[in-house]
Image (cartoon, rainbow, N blue to C red; front, side):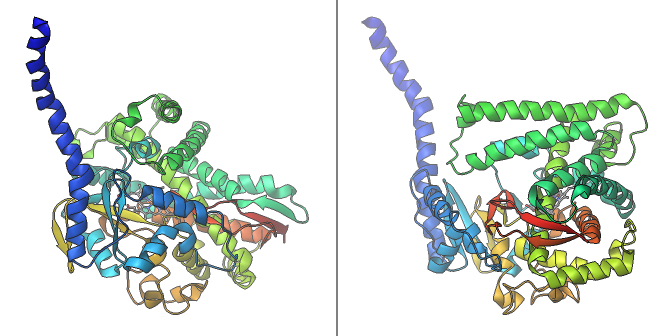
Length: 512
Ligand code: HEM
């Protein structure tokens, strides 16, 4: 009895010290902040869907998306924004182009104003940083890789990695790209008259092969293991993203978490094998991406050095960045050229003129393929693999006429911005590569209207690699085959981290 009476004040003190502050914090995050922020934005004329306790608008988003993903579009329609982001479409109609919504308890401000987006992306003083992401995604891409590091670490990583994407290195990589493409074309060589091919799957295989060989050299076989595990992990992550994130729950042994942990371990082991086999080869590390990273390990200077842990995360980053986006760029461009046979013929004529019917293209070929360049730019505009990205405000700040509180995530809906008639003209929803005839900066009313690779200091490091690879692959395919869409194709683009065809891309290949 005495013990209980003695325990009661201790228990009360413990509750006071530990539980009350936690509850107070939770109340601030779950109730007070959403209330205050909603009011602050409302005063500026910005509104949006109502915040719901803990979940924000996640349930609503899932419901609207589920309904929209049942629909199939007319293949000739490039008006895909309402299918991919039906919730944005609804909210833009109700609240205007700038609106506030809630990803759980995180405030998300969606803006499409190009001038404001440019100001954010070109800022170098750390006012905006990459947005917080779900911990599951770090397992996929690597927390210490270029995509997510910030500040001095980002400067160090980018400085070390830039030479891997220099013009000279890209020329060497072009040879690898050609060899890998030849390998897959050889597999297709038994296509005699006409044959159906699921092109999205083929492009994923091919682009994974290219990045594994071009960036990680002789370690191709191990590279393919990383690719397979990453594909599986991606599926788990896409599923997770539809749930509200509750801090701490990632440590619970739920079936989904156990699967993610297992795949994460498998991927780390596969990447480590790639690194170890290069270290064991004891030869000169060469100048491919992995070689450059390993050489940096030996540097005496801290600002020139990557740790093994960072190298492993960079490997994950480049495996993922290298195939996930590029396979989709090739997929959507193939879809567009299968629909627009006139453009397919134009490109083939250009290839025959600049490279011949049978000659294997080399690094010099691609600067001559002007029409092909325009087609890829138009494909990036209408079906850019990255359909949105975001930044977090690190301080309370003023942007144009907007007062943005610290911690707000600012979302740029690229897909919407790329189809804005006020910027791209009345034919914005049409496939018209000629709009890029006089260069990217003159294709629209704003010089930075095409943001497929972003802009500013954190512009995509792999953009030249991506464009060259896409040109190599398309040139070599068009030299050999005529492409047309299969009747069974269902036009259903969907955002699964990148823009993918929900039901694949079946295409008829006809040898020329
Ligand atoms: C069509 C193909 C591609 C598209 C559309 C694309 C798009 C983008 C975009 C929009 C960003 C900026 C994201 C942000 O700021 O939040 C980015 C960054 C990045 N991309 Fe790409 N990308 C492509 C291909 C590639 C390839 C082939 C690689 C690697 C070989 C790559 C590696 C990266 C990396 C490492 C970053 C982070 C750069 C930094 O923060 O300094 N990307 N990409």
